[in-house]
Length: 222
Image 1 (cartoon, rainbow, N blue to C red):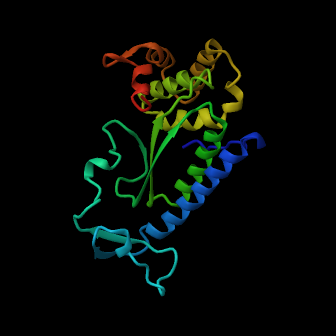
Image 2 (image 1 turned 45 degrees about the vertical axis):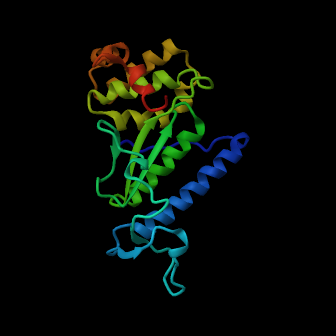
Image 3 (image 1 turned 90 degrees about the vertical axis):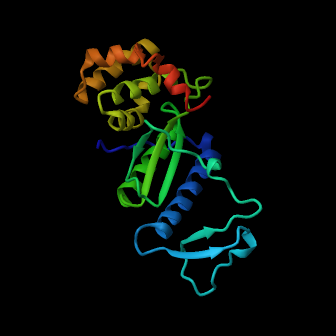
């Protein structure tokens, strides 16, 4: 997998960056607590928050597998965010922590987050599963949608994550290009990844199972 590197965004986005940093710290603690380092304890408890009391002698961080008994306010299985067929997933299916990321390839903060998540995945390969979903902010980023389409086109040749990493790592190189220039640039990068260039170009603009790539991308954010 191509190493992913991204420069830290400018200070103008400091508040968003702080939020991302806090999220990553909490995610690291969660992985450390719930990783496959030891068998999880099972505690049967009523479905009320007040009934879950941490032991004062328990080491921190700690993770308990709670068996929630049905009761008022118990979440239904349908309330959980489902992992759909055909999702872009990196990491083992049995990982104790699954993170669903909605992201935009032209967003500087998203590039920084992607690089940070790659470090976490490398550090905790058995404990974290990443699910990537498109959230192209086309009102702010003029090539967010076509960049997502490029990754989907690469996915048709089995190179989703390679193109994912490349786009984030080289965001500063292509972000200022016109849409036409980006298409040419993406074809060159696809060839560098060992993809069939003509097929990539056709897939980038073609219909896929009755839907354009634009429509497929839109499924994640409509």
